[in-house]
Amino acid sequence: MNHKVHGAGLGLRRPLLGPLTETPHEQIGFLEVAPENWMGVGGALGKQFRAFTESHPFILHGLSLSVGGPAPLDENFLHRLKTFMGEHNISLYSEHLSYCADDGHLYDLMPIPFTEEAVEHVAARIRKVQDILGQRIAMENVSYYAAPGQQMAEIDFFNAVIEAADCDILLDVNNVYVNSVNHCYDPLEFIKAIPSERIAYLHIAGHYKEAEDLLVDTHGAEVLPSVWQMLDYTYRQHGVIPTLLERDFNLPPLEELLLEVDQIRARQLAATSDTEANRANRASH
Image (cartoon, rainbow, N blue to C red; front, side, top):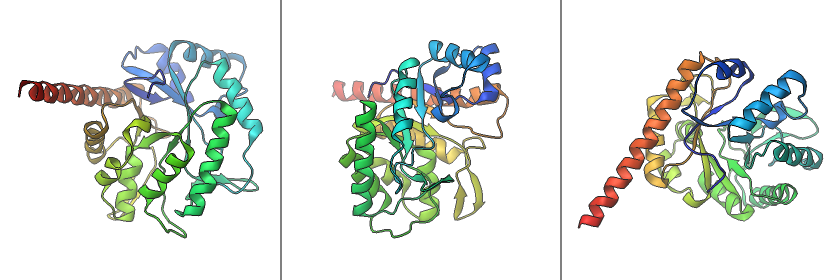
């Protein structure tokens, strides 16, 4: 999967623009933004954003397309998005495998029913998005707290959509962990079942423990040890993949975020070293 990003990435939030301009951050391999927050932004802020896209590889992570929803796709948005990607030389766009709108925006990511009918509906819409953009997109496994009308396991539904749509994957490791606790399944088996060749990049984030059997995906806290361990497992299973640290609110000082970015880089390096050592052992026997 080659989308010109590598290493460890960071979600670029507006409060970070100043600190990232002033602080050396060579460890950040790429940045990610929601295009909805930047399309049409001009003036000083637009120039500041342009300076970042000219000096860093970027990924766009959409919030509002509502790929799984019942309402017609917003084709006007997609044409504007395609222009925006061209203007800033951004080659990868990802979205959530969920829906967030019908007649109006719901301002939340709602779960798609895990059914064969939904597979066909969503895959057709993803193919249409790809046709309009003229490229493949990456779909993210989302956290969910109810599974209305469920007829398939989450992993079977997810893989069926990806296959039928012929798209790439944004694998959110934290979402797998959160869902595995909330819905009582083995997260390692879920990760193992993801097709390696389709993974474009990974997300990792913090969550909130509401109760022993209820985790809430907040992106508002530091990454927990159990999720770091799952990231290590993901690298062992699928190879070292570009990985982005998501932090949407309760933003700590940039220096603290960079420590977590450093953790990603260290784990990527360790996984690469382990792989090379294993190859050397096999070659010597």
